[in-house]
Image 1: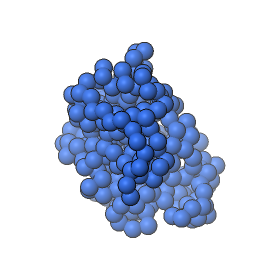
Image 2: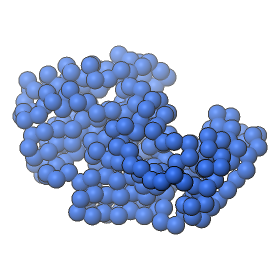
Image 3: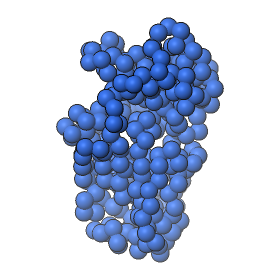
Image 4: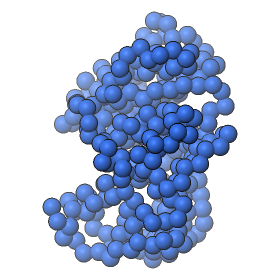
Length: 296
């Protein structure tokens, strides 16, 4: 399918140039990093910009930095970059695990974490992982810089807190201060390039608290705070798991679509939560995985 809409194309080499273009074009500009979504939307006519700003050449935009307290992922870092980083795999394995479930190798070679967050689709695979890590999105514009908590980032399906004149510069992922382990469970129709029918990230911490986030089960990826409160300080015994699974219905709002029915998503979300909790707890204890996770 050809792109028939006329637009100007810019490939700046500095952030200052990008911000000037965004200040000039505003909502009529489209930023392109990996292009895995943008090019498709241009071909389908869902995007009709005045200017496409290609940011792949920006200096420092492929940088991954790990410190004692956080991981910083620059906006041009691809999912393959994340998977190839031993610092991410060792220090932030949940981020790497969710990155491995994104589409196919070819897509992961192009698609960026920042771009994925900007797409804000409900089935966003990286969404639950950054949510349980309490990540922040860092933006810049000609007016200055600001940071947005990932908990305020998603404002609706395919909508974010990013303003038209802003550029996402990086995403920071805090390192939990307590010993922890996590896992991401994805349900898909087949192995390979498929969007999630449902997804859940679980982080288990040594003080018997848990962080839980879902995707593809509501209009935006979101934390499950009621379930987290229910689990806090408890052993994952049969009674606790039963109560947690019963609470799933109140935390999600799935739809029926071509990939799955609402009823199926609700049923599987409870099962996936249980499996994710038990797997995260096993990893926290240093035990080997007990099963292949759904969709893995």
